[in-house]
Structures are given as structure tokens and as C-alpha cells.
Amino acid sequence: MSNAGFTSKIIHSDRRGSIEHGSIHKPVHTAVTYSYDDARDLAAVFQGKAAGYTYGRQVNPTVTALQDKISLMEGGVATAAFATGMAAIGTTLFSLLNAGDHIVSSSYLFGNTNSLFNTFVNHGIDVTFVDATDVAHVEAAVQENTRLVFVETIANPRTQVSDLQNIGDLCEARGLLYLVDNTMTSPYLFQGKSVKASLVINSLTKYIGGHANALGGSVTETGLFDWSKFENLYDNYKKGKPALWGITQIKKKGLRDFGGTLGPEAAHHLSVGSDTLALRMDRICSNAHKLTQYLDQHPKVKQVYYPGLEAHPQHQRAKQLFSQSGGLFSIELVDEIDCFDFLNNLDLVICTSNLGDTRTLAIPVAHSIYYEMGAERRASMGIDDSLVRFSTGIEDSEDLLEDFKRALG
Ligand SMILES: *Cc1c(COP(=O)(O)O)cnc(C)c1O
Image (cartoon, rainbow, N blue to C red; front, side, top):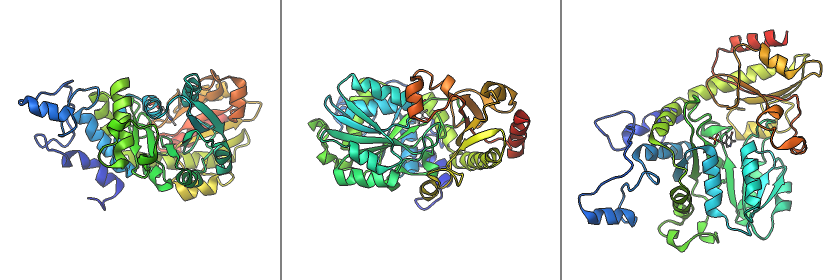
């Protein structure tokens, strides 16, 4: 199976694990705890000397199957799943950083990640936000106490593409952890491993789950980082292969102690959703491509932001790194059109937050998800008051085009 295509590999992964009654899905295991006939076996599992399940906050067979599936998608060596994408990000940083450490982060960030990093500042972790579309800005911000660099692949909502390859080279040269949030591209369009990421974050809620019916998040260890050089590891977790020391600490200090655990029912929904990731992504990207081509020519549209457009500042980079340009784009309308009126005129497109659904979604970002951060920070992220963000779904493209035509007409 190792040479099989993306989807063939993913959809057969459940039944290639232990076969439970021949079930082709991993069953939903709801038990919180696991019993052992021999107390010595229980002790061995707790001590990490034998494989097995202990307590549902730390491990669950349904969740383990999903973790393995994500590792397969990302080409990673191990994955930890969490209740949400934010739990994955927060827990990972919490378990790897200490007071006095410094992070360099892209300033083009998912809003709640931005908010979280500002909270870390109050806990003694210093953060420098930089324009990560150019490695020079990242390099200039690196200090003696810098532990990690955090970037997203394609930023939301303005679709800036980070200088992923060069930042990977910089992190390798300087021995820095490199965290890439791959939510916007998903492992079908891009693997963080290809640019030397140490850890890859995914909000499973978005493209991987894909149906807006379950929350989840993950962090995948790519196996590329030399954890023996990382100062913040506890001696307890420096056992076995060094490539797994980091994810072990994330699972123990983060998942176990913080408890942002993914539930087995959600894991099942996300796993079933992930089976069709490639099929949905092909259609989603094609729809985004067709809509942005159309809107880019429209007299009532002032600006379209989409990496698939030739005029996009990082178009060449996106083409080189990603197999397709993704399903997220934003537009600014001409001044005469009120963005609320335009949104109300759309029929097929749903006015809501979230992205990566099978349905096309739209949101006026400055007035909703980026409202709390204030006008100044919005301006620094290039978010205009009239900016509307779209996440394309899998509708028939003619119907979507017709909806936009009518709403702008
Ligand atoms: C949505 C999102 C998150 C957070 O994921 P949740 O599952 O909603 O907690 C993190 N990063 C990016 C880029 C996102 O789009």
C-alpha cells in the first residue's frame, strides 16, 4: 500500500489496523477506561513498557486510528489529536515552551491563534510578529532565546503565502523548531514535511473533517527535528527514538495534563470525512479557481485575493509548493456597494463563519471574526472593512457562478 495514491491509502487504513469483526470503519470505542486481567500487564502499560490503553483522556482506540490516518496523510511519524484546532496549538506550545522563551510568528494568523499568542506574552513567553512572506523578516527577529517559528501556509483572510521553504532552511540552520499550521492547504495540497517543518498542525474541523459536523485538531511530528538539542524537554521523555521525544512530551505534559482530548464520536466523524478529502479538495479548488477568475474581471469588484491568480504577490511560490491553490479567497467590493447588501443577495452561499465545508461559506471579516482585535491590528494584517471572505464548497460550479452574477447584478 505504501505506493498507493492519497485516497486509496486513506480509505483502507482503518481495516488494516486490528480487524474488529471485520469492521471496515474503526468502531467508536466509548469506554473511558481499560481493564487488565493481570495487574502486572496494567503496570507495564502505565510504565510505557507494553502497548495498551489506560485512560480516555490520554488514549482511545478510535482516536488512535484517526491519529495514524493523519500521520499517513502528512507523511509524519506520530500524531496527537485534540478536541479542537486551538487545543492542538495551545497545548503544543504550552508543553514545549517555558517562561523566558521567545517565538517568532507570522503576523498573518488565524484570529484566535493571534489572541492566544498575546495571552502567552502575559505568561512570560515573548512573541515577535513578522511578515513571514519573506524569510528576511523572520531571520531579523530571531533572538538568542528563540525556541520556535510559527507560520500558516496560506493566511486567512488575505491569502498571503509564507516563505515556507526558506523559513524551513533557516530553522534547520539555527536549530529552531518549525511549526506549520497546514489547515488551509490540508495534507492533500501540501505536506509541511516538504519544507522541513518539525511539527504540522491541522484543524481537523476544516478540510480534513470537511462537513462542519465535528471539531478536532492535531499536531503531527514529521521526524525531522533533532529533539536531543531541545532544551525544554523533561528527562522522563528522553527515552527511545529522539524523533519521538517531542510528541511524547506534547502527549504527556499537554494532552494528559491539560485534557483537551478529542472524543471518540468526533474522531469517527472526522475519520469518515477524511476519506473524501482528495475528492472534495479537487472540486473545492476548482470552484475557487472559477469564481476568482470571474470576480477578478467584474467591474464591481475592486480586489480579489487568491494565490491562484497570477497577480497574487506569491502566485509563483504557491504554484511551486501546493498542488492546487486552495478553497479560500477574499474580495473587496467597489465603494458604492455595501458588503452586507451583497451578502444578503447571495442565495446559495451561506453567511457564516467556518471554512472547509462542503457548502460555500462567506463572512464579512472585519465586522465578525476580526472585530475583537481592533482597527489598528486589522490594518496591520491588511484587513479592509469591506473585505468579504469565501470558502468554496463542492456545489456545481455553474450554480455558484450564477449566484454571484445575480448578487452583483
Ligand atoms: C480554524 C483554524 C484553527 C482553529 O481550529 P478549531 O478547530 O476551530 O479550533 C487554527 N488554525 C487555522 C488556520 C484555522 O483556520
